[in-house]
Length: 280
Image (cartoon, rainbow, N blue to C red; front, side):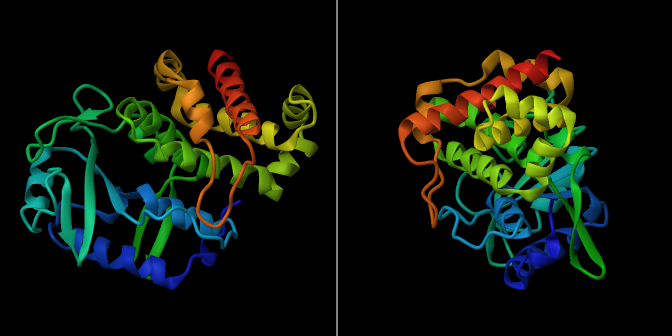
């Protein structure tokens, strides 16, 4: 499904410069524990899937760091000047970068409390997303991790639930983009038409390929995050479903899906998929 050779050098070079600076700042930080997340992840996946239209305007670079202790994070962040007042954003190679620690430093699970920040940060399901991530080669000698499409979507589900509560709605647009990726993917269409499970999903959605793609995406998300995280998700999902429906559209160079009723249909199909897969 992903062809990372399609990703432009200009995009990868930015990530390479930042990761080189980060991984060179402390011998305790292995590049294999670094995961590209956020808008940079979205843009890499977008290109790797063969799409060329512009996505939304944000171009931030976030790095998830699978850490065994806060000592590594402290040593790392002391090497770079802070950018802004979030306590997790640093100026690295001329780029504002959020450094997001997860793993053994989580307490409780899915939450970290960086010593440089005044309040905790939710990194729900990052460990599961990292475990299912794929290799992103930045150069012949430097590789990091990047979520696959369903892993990226899983992070966006959690982000929507957290951030929509205080009025930040951009994650709905990113979720709509992932559904679009699935609906347009020949690999996904082959699963829908060429496998027994896909046939069941397609028939359940009345042969509507876009709705079926949303439902299949939900099953893939649950497969990545597992039963415990799925249970946590379904306690909260979808938050304000009317707000999600209104915000569920791709901006940038593509206006999709067209019309509020269709947006609601796709959100409902995604929700049906989550309910079915989480309850299986």
